[in-house]
Image 1 (cartoon, rainbow, N blue to C red):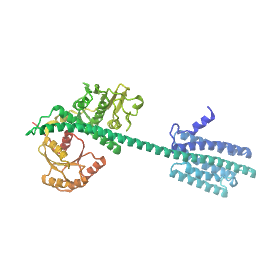
Image 2: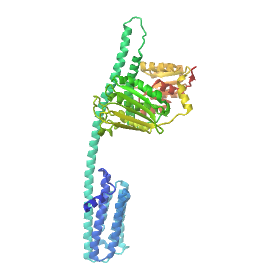
Image 3: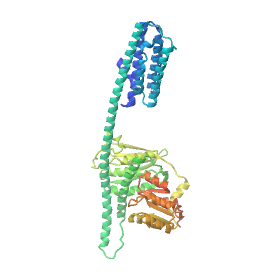
Image 4: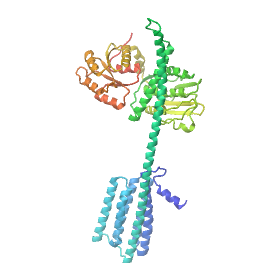
Length: 586
């Protein structure tokens, strides 16, 4: 191995394979300075020994070089700060010892100026810099005291020998100083390069995010406008038929039309949920796990039935296969699991070729629930598979002419990781893609299963529920749901009306929409309820799609529960059941 290669390997001790960085430059500087000190120490002290015939020069010099070797070893073991500090202490001791032995005329004190500069350039933190500079000053003071009081006796050398030592010291300081300045300039250049790279990276990320946002808005607009058109057109057809016949106020609705409306509504809700969930995750990070009992068989069957109608629009067929050994009931975060699998099914439908089958398989293996979704679409190129779960990454427009936003799979992976699970992809270009989700399998107790099964057989017993919602349509929908639960709903369209109605009706629970119009501060209304001696014990449930920070402020103000939009009747019923008792239906 050539000397150049060996030297380069030593210089890179502790930073092998690391990218360019400020820290890497400092570490390499310490390694270079240690090598130069070893070389300069050997040469200079050997020259002085030959000129003066003082053997005492060699032994301390070899000890100094040995300490510099230790510095290199520390850097190799990535003990960077101890390495830098040991190098500095070795310099100070060397200056003090040899300066005292060679005498005042050797001008050894000039090395302390080099040490002061080195203290600033070698250490990363101000604490280390200050300590090093103080050590340099102490070295100068001790050296001057020794010149006056001769605590350490000088070596007997002639004037010409002193001149040789002095010029050797000048040469050493020059060599070390030039080297240090070279690395200081190199470090400044690298800092400028790093700043430039950071700016370029942020600019690239900004442009990608801007492009991805535009794509996201385009796709969401497209995905929402289609089902919105289906809802509008279906309802309009029925209204038109009623208007054409006098005296008719009712009409039978076809089951297929109901499913069409339900599917369209679910697609819109899913799109809104994906965007809102992604925005919350990006801002807030991980959210708490909300485990509950879940009927895997019914959930999977309903999901296939719901999205089967969407698949039929492409002449595709959703096929569900639940392994017979799969437990019917598990405990998990149903909302997160539903979001993950729904995303995979929607993607499979979106990217499948027409007149093909999409397989959804559910099974258990080694105490884990395994759910896989396999489509028969164009597949994902091998060179893009390792990036498919990255935020805003897309594999480009598929052969079915659809562009993805790159949000759904990234969010699905984050949710899977929150559940301590894994999500994997198996795909061959032209042969479709298969996504497999694996999450821990927890079986509920017999009591929990019994409670879950019998929940639908229980109703409330006429308790009053105040629904505060400024949208007449949404307030009416929520009040109808509450009525089906067996409660007596009362409504309020404004905060002012809500206070009056609440004092008059004395509700058992208050359901409050967070996003009231006219810029009304919901926290003020919550505070008014909680400071009212009549209403301060009444539970308040916030329903909203607001950010977690806003909801957290509601909890701090006294809110008792939160239900994120969109939600299902069963979720609202379970939330109410935490505050008011249920009775069994005969």
